[in-house]
Length: 170
Image 1 (cartoon, rainbow, N blue to C red):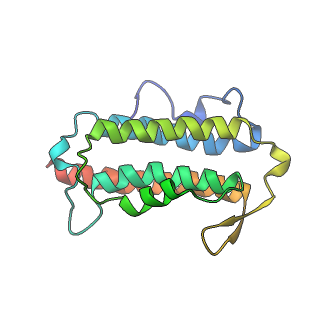
Image 2 (cartoon, rainbow, N blue to C red):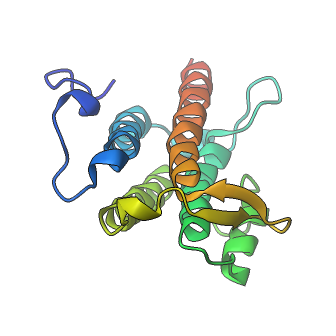
Image 3 (spheres, helix red, strand yellow):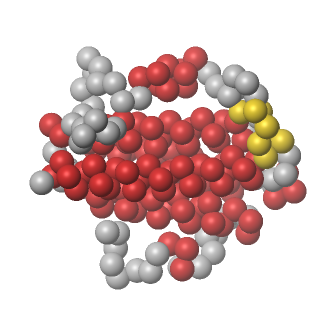
């Protein structure tokens, strides 16, 4: 889907400024961004909240992709979610009185990937096994676990988005 002239991001070499142990996370996020931007180019706004067989809409996936990155990287910093983040979480996938365009939601995701890369670049590799609490239950994870899950979760939802978009475009 993404630029067919280039190899996948992970085969383009190390990313400047990203610690070695976090390169795979950064590569996955950049790959997802390339594929998502390519996928959503020209996708009609009127199909944004459409669903296929009761599955999540493209609008949900776009909101959720950005929201999850934001939340997981917040936990990795050892911070609690803000009221704004919780409101965003509860609004994911629910068309509201505010009309979003496809490109507005893509831009929110792109900015969140930029923010994630900035945080990765500032992460001290010696802290990757430090524990962080996740969610209201403060379930245990490591910083590395949070970053790894952010990449895995992003790719999982990108795959679901790809199928939904392909069906809706037909």
